[in-house]
Length: 59
Image: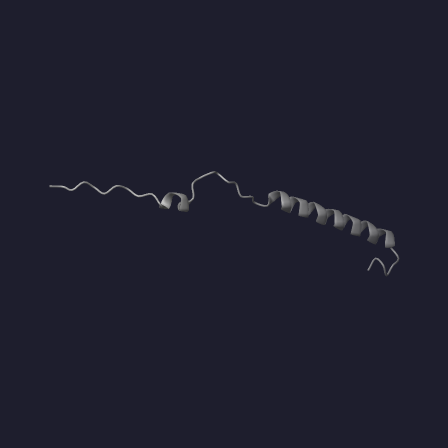
């Protein structure tokens, strides 16, 4: 529409504003992306091999 009536400066300004807004949104998305935090807890594989001694025989 703007191009048809000769408002090319307006079109350029809106395109620049749109590009800036899209860039800002992508930066916010990247900042809010969840990250994994390693807590140093043992994995199941590292503790699954443990055994307990058998219970003593009861008379």
